[in-house]
Image (cartoon, rainbow, N blue to C red; front, side, top):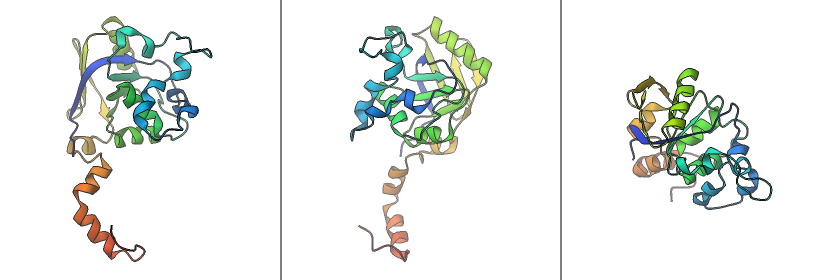
Length: 198
């Protein structure tokens, strides 16, 4: 079980409220069995025109290459509940997201995939985005246990989604089941509607 108590990395931001999961990963790229290849299609329609020519977008900007902490505005990840959206962000290299607010199902899908989600005040997000714009090589540190984000000379308060499961390592449901295989087997054997444990 992997405990996630902090995340460090360089920042990248995508401005705008109500960025939905179709913008994060268009539906036509969801016909894959291997989620690890989805990263190349993150924000595809916002990053490239109809002929494949790169557009101006932070995910195309060389100065943010290798950044792992995404900063966003309100209601990020709204729309459909596709789990491909956090998978695409992971594939691109994102390890945590800081935002004003998140769509409920998207946030849950992120946690289930080990991406910490933390919420901050609007003015703090605005300041953090401006800091990243001016300091693309600077490190950002998310302290999940203490609900803080530190960057440059700033330290802001945040609220971590599912803080307990992240810091205790119980966010990984499959890993937790496998580590408690005997308990699962025992419960399974007592259920009247199951045919035995494999």
